[in-house]
Amino acid sequence: MAENRPEKYTRADKTAQRRQLIVEAAATLFILKGFHQTGMRDIAGEAGISLGNLYNHFKGKHEIIAAIAEIEASEMEPLLNLLESAPVQGSAALIEFAQAYYAICSSPENAALSAEIVAEIFRNPEAGGTFLSTRSRLIGALERHIPDIYSSRKATAGLVLDLIERAGQSAVGTSAASQKEIRTSLLEILTRVIEPS
Amino acid sequence: MAENRPEKYTRADKTAQRRQLIVEAAATLFILKGFHQTGMRDIAGEAGISLGNLYNHFKGKHEIIAAIAEIEASEMEPLLNLLESAPVQGSAALIEFAQAYYAICSSPENAALSAEIVAEIFRNPEAGGTFLSTRSRLIGALERHIPDIYSSRKATAGLVLDLIERAGQSAVGTSAASQKEIRTSLLEILTRVIEPS
DNA sequence: GTTAACTGAACGAACGTTCGTTCTAATGGA
DNA sequence: TCCATTAGAACGAACGTTCGTTCAGTTAAC
Image (tube, rainbow over all chains, first blue to last red; front, side):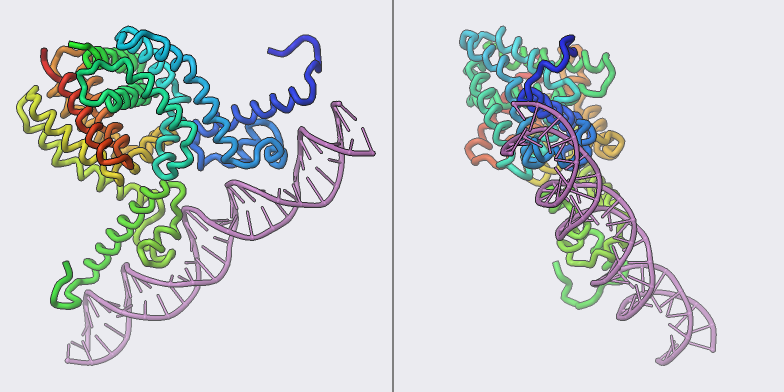
């Protein structure tokens, strides 16, 4: 991880690194305790900097949360490309997507964070900007792969997404055996849902 | 609602009414702002009583939350009876249950509250006692109605429950047209999932 | 020498809870 | 039936703590 040649970084580089360090520290705590149970002092302590300095890098708590939301969104980019480049209504692409998306959603960090975000959006809808727009893109891309046996492919795409997300959340913290069962059941269900029959 | 004869209530009655009034006030605020954004002063104000008096009725915030959790659980009782009394693997009962459960989950109050609870359980698992045990009962009752084409009926039952819940949440705050689409899509999906074919 | 990074003290507001007090409905003996 | 006693409902000030944010002052890079 550490470079052999010491101190090769310019000042701007180090500042950028600090920023990222802060975001990672904040994310760790948000996952562990939630947005509103995590204080600015906690974040500063976790990042190993002073409280005052934290405000040199971020205007406030909301800006840290926004930074995390954007990182989350950017992690979806490869998956979006997968769906958007695949031929229309190829069920193979959808299953492939489902597995990849499930893998993301069932990681403890992402599961806890997305539960946090869902709850937050309910009481503060305009705060979910980045999150909701990413979700819209996901639904749009997914929609193309839903067979037209459904009265609304868009609504179905949304539900498929919901199902994968919640399945991932359910798997967190359970035994390895349960996790396998959930994953298998999810794929069985999805297979039945998207088969064109 | 009000008795014609004035002042017929005994002291114990009035106390019980107060307790319920407090719980309702707290639930209103929890739904609106979340557990941790709602203060004891807010609850007291919403209930129209003093801060100090609030502590005559409840030991603390956690006890108010517990009271709400129990009410939520008791609302599931009729649905549990429906599933448990129906003949095994009757898909009709499952669809009937799904509609009823969806109706509950798609009400704005329940949707917001359950999002709040899900997020809370992630960071404080032992706090979800009543909620999780009710959920276990639901899964157990639902399991009997899942066809044995799945490798794990229990896991499938859990996912079906998740799907209905999230569908309900998704519908909140959208247009009436969207709500109808989501409901229809949900039933279409469920029909495919549980048909014994 | 100018600018940015950095520090910890300090701010006012809000938090959950406890406190002493007053008031009132219920109770039991006379 | 009356009155003294009592349990608990009601109140609002105050507790100690934590919150997000600001600020004067110091250090180090350019």
